[in-house]
Image 1 (tube, rainbow, N blue to C red):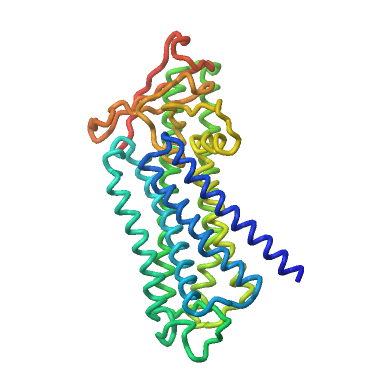
Image 2 (cartoon, rainbow, N blue to C red):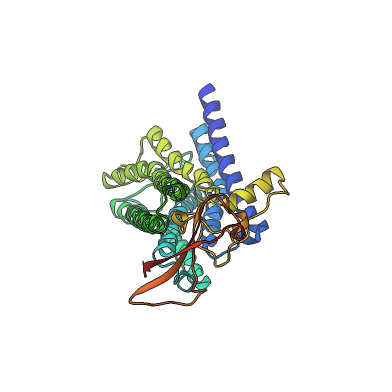
Length: 390
């Protein structure tokens, strides 16, 4: 009894964190005009998906863990399993969409506003939900996922108190590779490319900065800030990918092995551990994909603490290494008064127009040294021309 109570409390807390965290993301976007952008459509879609998972699936999964029996009948059992597969798949595919969006923002910063339009986002979200429904409700309610091609939990020999998810090798391979392994490879590749480009960009800026400021005294603050931002960008990418792999890889590995071996009765304890580890990713997503964004943090502070005095930085650009990682893309307008200390700023000077010069695009890099945060106080500012490949 004590172990059941402890399990029930733990799973209830995880469910509550999942629901509250994703509600907070949705409220932050709703009340903050600055966050209503095309880029954040994928973040909001991810939050809504994880919120539905926390409301429609996790309470019943916790009920099964505590009671060991399914008291709601075979029809609702199949609906519950279908919702579980659909929402988990949609959550993973939303993470993939975010990684691809960040990849385009970094590799083509000048063309990004014309590449990622609202209807592109709408088509991507529709595809995510069509794929999610296609691997959940359709096969489960038609019996395509079972070994004998009959609808699960409706057989004469199926116990009425069990809610089993049956799989066959074909369904397992299609589902696992389409909704996890291929997205995992794509996410690893896109984030690796983002990291490489950001690192090369930082080195290029650093070399030009040193060339323009030979004095070690004047270049030291910029060098320190750039190294710090590079470290933060590396840590963020590692945390995002690490959380995704740690949460979902054990479940899909177990799921694939059991399906290939045609095991119809999964080991309950092991299955429960890997399943809830995957659910935990929905509780982490609001922190990984929203709390790392400075605009979301400001919105969180207003919602949770009532910090009416907190001013949302208007037009503040992310640092060079943070462009396109998790903080969105570089805005065209900047407000230097709101930028702290020494910093390096990337600004797209084309204002939406493509500039081509031998296959390169021109971006102005403005460096404000010596710790000043107001251009009017600086005798002169150094402008460097950075050529980035399209």
